[in-house]
Length: 283
Image (tube, rainbow, N blue to C red):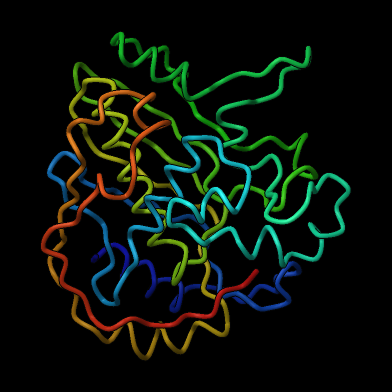
């Protein structure tokens, strides 16, 4: 919690106002932030200075790993975060590549599981990484990326957290995740839950111990209509100790993640938190 709150305070103290063309709102913006999560000791980075709905974050991650391309698929596993971008984004609604209601296009997990090659075939990036790590191999290119500039016009949103690099040292697995843009009051808690959980899951299904997860953010910002709630409410609260994430030990493969895993296979222990804060969401 300390590094999260320190980042929020840094944005308030050092950030500069930037006009955001997509949302029509100003953002108080800071360039470059680095966060570290201790997955080895299960210090789950769940925000305690407000109630955080962690299940939706893990459900969204599960949808990415499965390569979902529809908001309806995400809703079916308990995640509503793609409803607005799929159905209320005016630029996407008029895009000729949009297939209809709930279609997200070629974003996030679609790129991770079926990246298009020049010959028309597809590459399953995630499967290659899991296969390598399961054999104890790290070719220094165990990289899962959702960032495909050639297909930005074929999806409803460019990826914010766009690349994940896995590193194997002995029997310990590390993760470095890169994020181009981060709505800190709303999005960051989702993002840090997902970085932590991604490393924990990948270590479990490839037979390794989890190390640390490193989260690198380029543009960290607070929207103008979120600032008062962050400065005058959330930052005034005292944080509680970190909770723990419990993952069903029967999850042993990528096939398991693709087929039978549900949110019932994830639990959080010892989560103490303050009251929720309803931060405005910008589409």
